Length: 376
Image 1 (cartoon, rainbow, N blue to C red):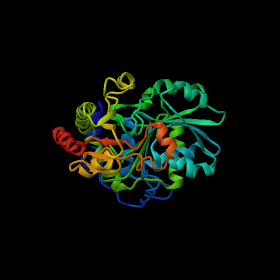
Image 2 (image 1 turned 90 degrees about the horizontal axis):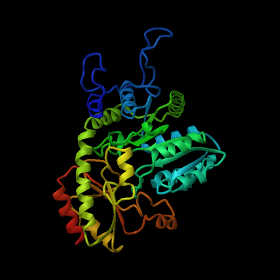
Image 3 (image 1 turned 60 degrees about the horizontal axis):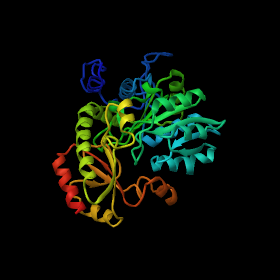
Image 4 (image 1 turned 90 degrees about the vertical axis):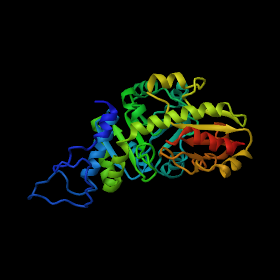
């Protein structure tokens, strides 16, 4: 069954009364039929029917066996990292989301979970970073915010040759465009607040796992720590996922046009978008994904253009987050990646001339006109 069909019909027929929309099972606990008997649900921390439909749905979309729903993308990442255990070493994408960087460097390091940051587009750097206690390689592809494309199949081979897990944050491309589990990843993570939800109205995280044993252990951690998504937000997320395909198609179509337009603008010195043929990751992305997504980063000529651009945009919103139907612009230098030290930010190219766009579903002519005024 095709992904569009799976997404649109997620939960249809689940309810015994024939409800097309999955009911919101807003309950903390469930009645037992008799002593030592259960309906399959006992307490909503351990399992809730609305959340279960969502969890089964993300597993199906990612071609996994187990799905788990969390109250945020960061709680999903935290749960996965804690599952790896005390004294674990991780190899991380170097231009990773600042919140993940903060989690590792300021919180989990207290539990002896340490990280080495490398350019995960360079396979030799990954191999060189492997230590005796390396438990996992964690990558974003495309990366945030520079949109580098990593060779998922090759990295999976390196990981498994060294008995290491490969964890992929698939937030930017979603299962509609990329399926890391099919390319060899062991765990896929989503900030579901983004494209999967699609409407900037909820915070959630999702995990999909291929191996049953790993999935069971992650469920044990989730249940034990109580890191669960509520029934109402599970329902909102299910509703969002049903239109994932048509949203992604429109957003990507807009992004391709806007990236080409930005390339030709005199105030723009560089455009980061894997859908441009001159992007270093263009051919690799063609091989392992079905599209390029709708995230664009670009550099302007001088730092002074940044506040002027942000002051003069009207249609585009200056706001953090991404993936919703509205186009947003972010200044990674002080926002999403502000927790990374200045020297590291600059060395990576996350400088004070860089802006990141999350392209929405508006008419591309209106978006171009808005940016033309702001850049003039």
